[in-house]
Length: 212
Image (cartoon, helix red, strand yellow):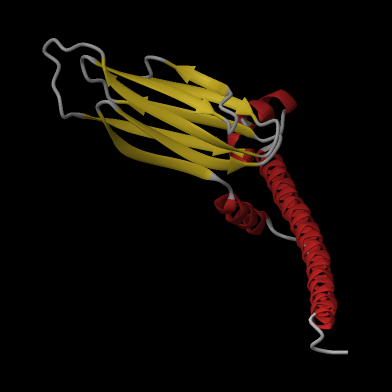
């Protein structure tokens, strides 16, 4: 069954809606640190764009860290900018904003900075415009390339879920085996203790001549 161009665009749009885009806005009070965390797969391109309102005497530090506290990006006087990195492994990454008052002279207190953050990763982080110019792709070919990349992301997600399921199954089987061995060991210990008690009491009663 062949798809028309309109149907193909609808399919691409549907799958694009399933992709990961995190765009948000929040307020950050003075002398406050706020971190946003996200789980991202291995070998995934991550791009971020941020913009903060400026308040005299207030400084904001931006850091992008992994779970091992490796700094992937940092900016001491963060106002407006972009960052990008590629993940080496599946991990939990966090983007931290920390606002401090750097000058006590005529600095308004009790104010909050408005932070706008747009994070894209995977298919949405790729620059298809430059790719189209470099490879001289037609608009339909660009959409097909997006669909191909998005399909590959979905396949990678399913592969990761399958691997995780296998790991959990192996862990459950290993735990069940250990519990079984421990139960058998406990029953042997209890049985041995019961036999020892019977023999001990038998010898004790014989020594007291309570039984023959």
